Length: 147
Figure 1 (spheres, helix red, strand yellow):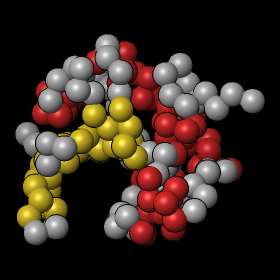
Figure 2 (spheres, rainbow, N blue to C red):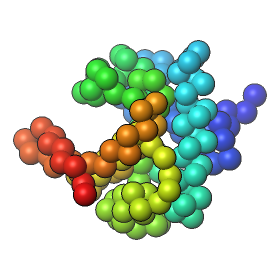
Figure 3 (cartoon, rainbow, N blue to C red):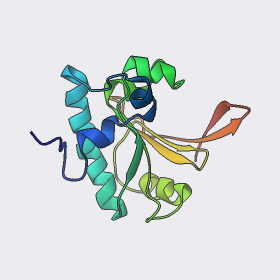
């Protein structure tokens, strides 16, 4: 069986976790999380087509054990397969990718420029089109709305 979820994304790409691998924690989604992940992969295909360049996923699905261990929010969309952290360096900087997505017609719940290190793109059910910029200081993130 292929682990291909969509045209551009595989299950392995969207469940990769260096932490889970090091600690021997299974990070394979099932049930509704897997259904969500297939939808997320399809939505990320739209992002890939918009940018026209490969996307490098640093974090997709994280089960609750992995999410807790890496310091993720208890309400993170990652735990239900509805969020992806990524870069697309062949397109441009994180800010350039962020701006391309926010100026597009793509639908999403949250788009976050995570300190110019990566993009967080959440596909939660609310579809708020929320756009945020994170600033990190002493291990703590503050978020401001981008206008």
